[in-house]
Amino acid sequence: MTATLVKEASTPPPPAPVDPQRRARRRGRTVALFFVLPALLLLGALVVYPVLFSVGRSFFDASGNTFVGGDNYTEMFRDPATLKAVRNTAIWVVVAPALLTGLGLMLAVLVEKIRWATAFKLLLFMPMAVSFLAAGIIFRLAYDEDPDKGVLNAAAVAVHDSFEGTSTYPTARARDGQGLTAGGDGSYRTDGPVSPGSTTALGLVGVLPGDVPAEAVPASGAASQTAAADELRGVVYLDFTPGGGGEQGRVDTGESGLPEMTVEAVRDGRTVATTTTGPDGAFRFTGLDPGAYELRLPAGNFAPPYDGISWLGPTLVTPAIIGAYLWIWTGFSMVLIGAGLSTLPRDALEAARIDGANEWQIFRKITVPLLAPVLSVVFITLVINVMKVFDLVYIIAPGPVQEDATVLATQMWLVSFGGGNDQGLGSALGVLLLLLVIPAMVFNVRRFRRSQR
Image (cartoon, rainbow, N blue to C red):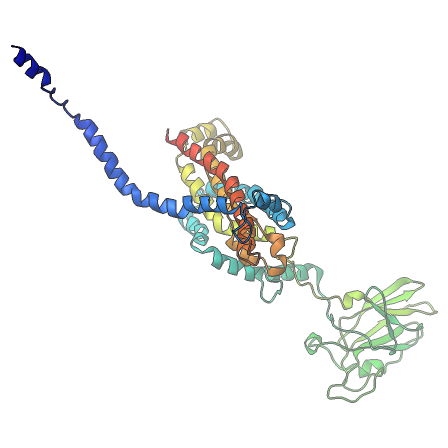
């Protein structure tokens, strides 16, 4: 009996039955890990490792051999170029996402009311298919200061000249000692006084052949006319004989008159009469009182032509690049907000219309509040995107104003590889950029999680 008890005590208990559900879960986790492992490896190699390496590299000097602690971070905020990059990045973050979200919202609401909504959305979304490199080249050409190349300046010059006009002879000038003296304001005036009853010849040179109007005729006939006792005659002509010859200061045969030139009669420092030359350059003032006068060719005759706006100058380069960014991303914003707009409860909108609300009240008090989650996601996504903008700034901004347009991403590249060759300081800039992006990313992730719940 004792042996039987010992035998029974030494016999192990039977194994507990395996739960099929637990086995299935374990198998599912294994399969999931198998499929996720390649992505985790790529994420670690392309994201985690570079981030950790950059953080470590930011504590070493340019050579990477000497540990300098936080000196790179201190130097980063002492460098005027870095401070300007921080300022420009702040401008981008404040302006670009707000404008894009507002434009996208307005376009999404308006597109719903047109017949060809799909074609319009496609047209606005097409710039998203253009790379930032190509878009930068396009806008670098569009912003060119030469109106013959830059389409924006060509339009600005056309509008300006339609309202203000332009000078006919921007390169014209008077010969020294030939009867005209240059004024301090760019005008020309006669050396001595002139009186009614006389005829005065005002010769100019330096007029380009293309600037002489087609209706211009020789001035010799007008120069030979005799003035009445109460009138003052004269001629403004090109003091240059084609083919050579002729005498300076005298109207020779074949020398062209300069039409459309403004001439003023001045007495005691006050303009008493104004006229414009005819096709032969002739002008005349009638009804003048006896006495001495001075003839003046105002500076407006010689003003340089309006060349447009310096879009890529130090003042406007950042707004100009933001404009290019808006062209690319407006379609993205419109499509996302339009998708959210299509899910709004139509009964709430119709109820508001039945209650007498107009479209602006519906938009402001119903549409915008209901779209708030979508608008916040679009805004934060664009904030993250503009913090990393590099291509447009680097391509559009010319070399002399590169520093005026720089943002953190371009400054990081310039310091590390674009001539600075200080990868320690460049890594510190990269860490700063990462720290600025993380809060926006966390906010976006939390927003996605709340929307899924």
